[in-house]
Every structure is written in C-alpha cells, then in structure tokens.
Length: 248
Image (cartoon, rainbow, N blue to C red):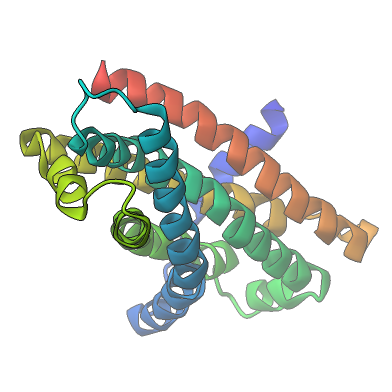
C-alpha cells in the first residue's frame, strides 16, 4: 500500500515535469473535456431526471399530513439533490463510466508500447497523457453537476405536472424557499465535485498507467475494475470528510 501511494504521488509530481508546448496541451485538454464531460451529459441528464421524479413521489407519499404544506416536497427534493444526489451519486456513476474508460485507455497504450514511444521521443508521457485528463475533469465536472441539478428539478416538476401529486407552483415554491442557503449548498456541492473529479481521474490514471504489462489484456480489465472500486471508496471517504468540514 505504501509502495502504491508513493508511485501515485510520484505520478502527480511528474505531471509538472518537462512541459510540452501549450498548443499540444490545449488540444489534448479540449479532447478530454469532450470525452470525460460532454459525452456523459446524456446519461447524467436521464439519471438525474428520474432521481428527481422518484424523490418527488417518495416524499409526497411519505408526507400526507394536513399540517405539512405541499411546498415541503420541493424543499426536500432541493436539499437532497443539492447536498447529496447530484454531487455524490452522479460522481459515483462517473467513476464507473469515466474511470474505467481512463484506466482501459492508458492500460492499452501501455501494453501497445505507445507510452514507451512517447518517452523515447522525449515527451513527458505522464504530463501529456494524464495532465489534460485531470485538468479537463476539474473544469467540466462542475458543469455536468449543474446540468444534473437542473434536470433533477425538471424531472420532479414533470411528475408534479402530469400526476398532480402536488401543485407545480407549490413544488417551485419549495425549491425557492429558504433561498439564502442555496448559495452555500451549491458551493458545497461544487467543491465536493472538484475533489471527486480529481480523485476519479488521478486514481484511474494511476491504475491504467502502471498496469502490469506481463499480464496482457487481462491486466487491463483488472486495472479498470480497480480504478472504479478505489475511486468509489475514496469518493465516499472524501464525501464524509468534506461534509464534516463544510456543514458541521
């Protein structure tokens, strides 16, 4: 474990060694933003909309007292989506989609000796391959989570409109209620997202870059699995730490 942690820290340090031309990094950065973030918007939007819809149904069903106003449903959905569902659950989903993709891509490049070819040409392979992935995720993941929040609220609103489980105006009122706390919650969610983005890309890159080439394609599969598992574990651990620091 100590050996792996040391190699992980050295990998992060090597990202900043022997930088290439800015133009080369910029093109790689744009490609990674599209691959890591833009291509994930569809699945994130669909899952967020259904999460918002289910939250509305569950909350409205659980709260059937005449003493509790209807806008409580919207307020509860807002709290759940901003604080936990969008930043944490969506990040876990991205860990599975993006993390496995990163690990398998780098592992395949390692097996096919493309990484060695970059090193022979004098290119800092860690900085060229991994650096844009980490930076791209830090830039695009918060935008993906904002999309997730929007579609989560939209999914809940559509359920209210078509099923009339509660009036739509009461649902919107609940989302807008106690608006002085919204900025704090959004800042908390986006801060978590940035930390999660770094963990997903850096951990997945580590497992892919340091894949055991003697094991062949089987090791690439193991690296992808390890990337998803360890990324998810560290996301949950970081979620607890950040919640303790920022909300308590």
